[in-house]
Image (cartoon, rainbow, N blue to C red; front, side):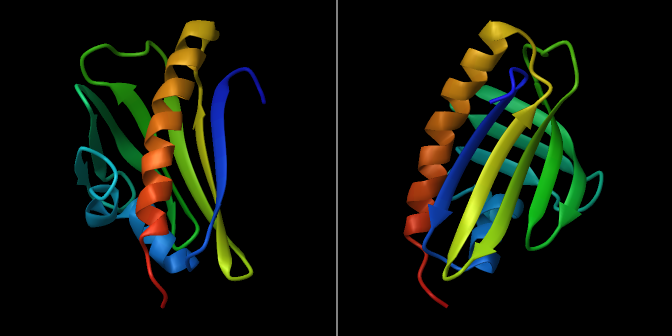
Length: 135
């Protein structure tokens, strides 16, 4: 894994359009994130509460049903440099391959902190995704 990013992947037994809803809509994100404000459009605001911390940003790329990415910083304790969170959902037969990337992180402490953070929340995403039913 490159030393400036967090990257997590999973294969989910659900159609991509349903998975993308969990990644790129306010209602979908609210199934696995504590509190969500998202306008899924280019330059739309993003505000995610993850326990006691709040991440903020703007949507920088949106290509349904495959990709959403947004700028990322911490509201109370800014990182000090730009970073980006990206979700990709790729058809893989009857399953969907999901990748989460957080790029632009610097230093071992930021990487370790964000790996722990996203590992926890990605598990919550996988639980929410596992509850989806076809079609």
